[in-house]
Length: 130
Image (cartoon, rainbow, N blue to C red; front, side, top):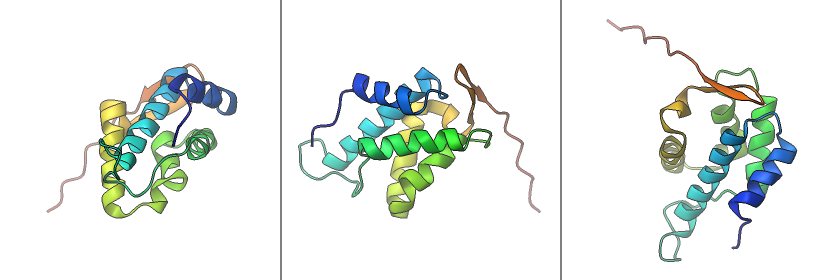
């Protein structure tokens, strides 16, 4: 399957989700490409994921991220209904790892504020259990 170029997909996301910062949209496209690579595999045979991220799914993720603005992690939360809910638990873990590679340590903390910035929220320490 030939997917649009990074530039084309970034342009599509800019039209459907201009509220998201350009740098964030670019990381979303990069994650989509990583998921596709994991689906296709390195030698053109099937990879380790049974699900891929189409451009349509990428657009849905961006639109849901905008809908979820104000959530503690809109982008991560929006990925669940856009893609993750169709995945096995193993695939969800694999996609989470890819997301951490693309987004870095911000994956668990990034919150979209407006169309010019993102903010990393402070983690609250976990309560210790007895």
